Length: 186
Ligand code: ITT
Image (cartoon, rainbow, N blue to C red; front, side, top):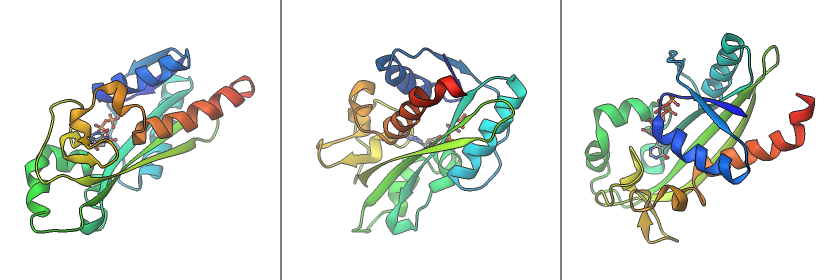
């Protein structure tokens, strides 16, 4: 069993579906700690280390964000705050008359066992910032994130569909592959 520390129920739903495929049970705990400011990698490492020592068990945490090329990577590590303040309409305003709509979601999983150093696993997915919100599935920036190959935004994809290739799927896949290989020596 893996313990996932997060306050975001949407992340839990997506992660559960992915772990299920590997027959790994997922437990969810919301520790409600303050995240330090820094890169996704720094935040994931520090969060995993803190939670592992506090709970005295192995945990994963995730730090994620939307990086828009024309905005020099904004909102990036500020994604959660910007989603709550500017929201999707605010992002669309910033992107008015901007031709280059390239964007990327990134997810970094931090894993830590008690009394050891954390490890991190990165996942990414490329897309475009749509001209308007589309779909009401998923969460946060999903209705804005258009994926050309699908002809749809993340907001138009079910959890199962999004989980085929999302940033979270990619980071969790890389974590799970490592975990399966290494769990006996942890
Ligand atoms: P925890 O830290 O408790 O896990 P959180 O929602 O604060 O939950 P993050 O700090 O990782 O999560 O913030 C990332 C933000 O980026 C998140 O709140 C969303 O606004 C956005 N985001 C991340 N992944 C996303 C996804 O798959 N779809 C849409 N928006 C996403």
